[in-house]
Image (cartoon, rainbow, N blue to C red; front, top):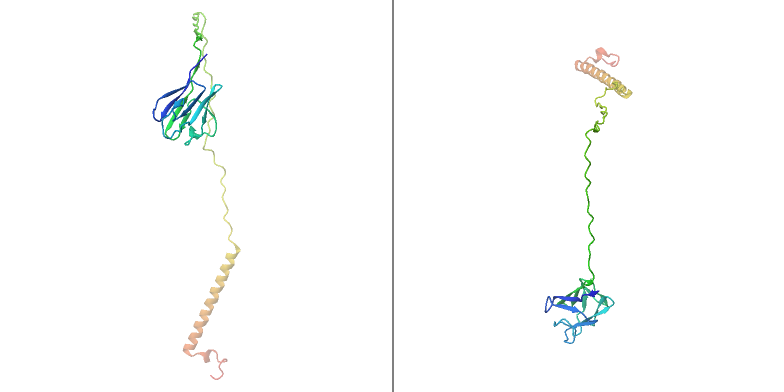
Length: 211
């Protein structure tokens, strides 16, 4: 088995696109020339961070830097196991992409499995002496028609309600009042004529003894 070296690729900073191979068990990052990965930027501390190998993982730690170490926008508060594609930010100006290498075995020979061959079966020729089955369509029963116009039912004549007794009583009262008014008018006209012609003594002598 052979293991390709994991690496850091600078995205932003003094040398964008520069590749740093992680081939040692511990690599420090910082502005100082003694670091394994030297990054000459004012925002990067002299010894800013380090990457150590633990098993099959690379662990990133901040070394008390002034401007901090971030992974995918989150500031590191302790060791962080790097994953392929993690974006490491040192301060505000420098960013590096962590790329994990692929594991491969150069001695292994890859043999592809043969694909199964699909053979289509050729249909046998039909015997001319054998009659073909006769197709008979299925008989469908036609649906029963539904008539929307049905015969009307018996017509019922509603009997008008009888007038209430109160109307009849009111009519009698009005007739009585009319007759009373007519009598009063006739009596008034009669008295007016007697008074106008001064006939009191002639018609009612018993009411006026002095006449």
